[in-house]
Image 1 (cartoon, helix red, strand yellow):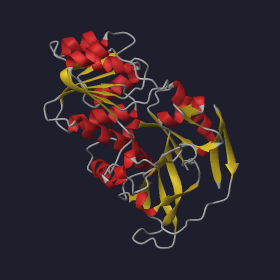
Image 2 (cartoon, helix red, strand yellow):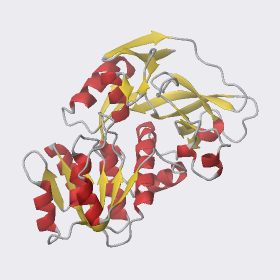
Image 3 (cartoon, helix red, strand yellow):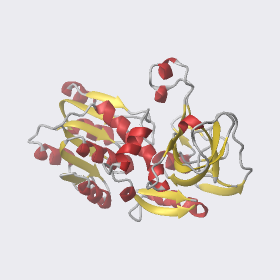
Image 4 (cartoon, rainbow, N blue to C red):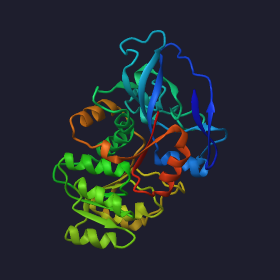
Length: 343
């Protein structure tokens, strides 16, 4: 089978490797679609995210869907040929966090495409059967791959505890920011605002319900939101950009007593803010650690037409052009929102 290995920053090689064989409780998935995530781009550009460093060639990709090709012994229920999305998180199931219902905080967690675990940019991958979620027949593989970022957006929303009528701002209109915007509107939020540096993403934000869309390179976002809210500020601000100054922007947009949810991953592995501003406002600040127990709900929302996944997939490329897909995502050019590798 073919697999795309990141050999060193900005160099991907497609190699022929053996097809793995499923063990007890495992399935072999024929991969059909893999989304390029911003965290994948961090590895592509720098070979690391924070203190997690790539020390050997790495298969990237953790947003994916495919079809079951082989079932290992002991697997019951799923059938060969079933369309599935796969949860990339591998939790231990028996630590304090797992037993408390927080597998995303597992003390022994592993995650596909995070060293030393390989990812999904290969024609076949192994997964435990319980991490596979059957897709409706009408759902495409690309939509199935988008369920992982939708899961992160769902988990972000749960942390926010949004109430009907809350005002919401989203800082950063990449795929997760735009999914949060859709979920906020579906949950009854009012006066949605969005900020980004790219006009085409702001146009997308408007199409998903943002009444205020601010280009941070041309406008003062804080002044725009102050005018938009009669100087009150926003009830909930989602930071989904991971920029060097976006946490600071988020705390300045939030109202006194408001909530800030940090979903973005900063490239520098540092969060910087003016403590006095956050303290005087009495803000609640929460950080998003991936997701938990979201796939069934994400599938149901997409199947019911409550969220648009197809509209976020702007580029579809074959595995042979995976390097081009990473360069496209890294440069944020050609109107890219989500690039998907299809096989």
